[in-house]
Length: 455
Ligand code: ASP
Ligand code: MG
Image (cartoon, rainbow, N blue to C red):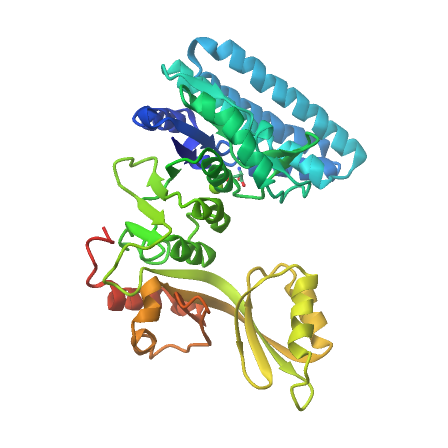
């Protein structure tokens, strides 16, 4: 049994779903459970409709719902073959309900996390129906399972955590037996509380759903189908022409995901990792490319560095104690501020009297700045970038830092960090220097590559 997950762009249109159908057909003998995201940008639009409604802009909200209805009818019904009338009824029922909900919200003028999840879930509820109809019309034996019947979560709406024990038991009891004989199709991202309220696992949560499903049914493999060939040695938006990494470890993949590689949600890793299930990243537009295989243990690799990850346009905060001596409690006070604004810190370096750090998101930067100024001097440096060399062999190979610094010797390096995991080496440099720096580092570390690991 395998789990195949298709992201939003892989199911955005009639043509995309047709591609998914032919990919799944080639894997039927492996008894797939198919997890799908909402079609295209549906989740963003649903949330936009919810916000418009809550702000009292009823007509704008209803217009977004109309646009989504038209898209689902246009692309969905074309795929459903003789069952089009039945799918038409399902789609219309969901959108009628959405119309009512949006009207209600615009009267009440408020949006609870619970209503947000009720609305956001519609994308995956519908895409999974559309895909199951498309599969049947193409001659596959397919069964739609409402993910909310099997993925049980706590009630932290919009960020719900699965109740793993119950969820795994339900997946074994309700999904496994169906998947023995029929292709199961479920929506990703969504779940429900024990008393039946719809929840979501957080944005991008379909990968997480796929990992949970795979862990629950003891799948032999997870395939994450996206629109890229897999993980690359360098971010293609910064340096085209990087090599595809054929094989990496879970630890390396999470490090890469954290620092910028948009391919995979880091939380995906956990349930799969715990059960030792390999994860494959594949391209639904180029299904013959073998992609990237992520496994618990890295395959031996002659190159010390597997990939160069980056994160652009970040801000450095330099925080200096206003007292002469570093009083104890200074660090605690700093981190209390970040905790208050629920902002996580990416990189930290400290000296006797000052701390420099970079923020994961700058949404509350002004207020963070104000609070820190109560007990310290703060300066900001904007337009910076993090570059990270990732690879398990970095810890066993002397001289990596030396080589990297040599390559960057004409650049101003603002911060340096080597995490406790020892599988990454990160620097902060000016964002404008990033493309050059990445190309130079790539040349240094990837002009010769181990053919077993890199394509
Ligand atoms: N549709 C959800 C989102 O856009 C979940 C996902 O695509 O993974 O966040
Ligand atoms: Mg996604």
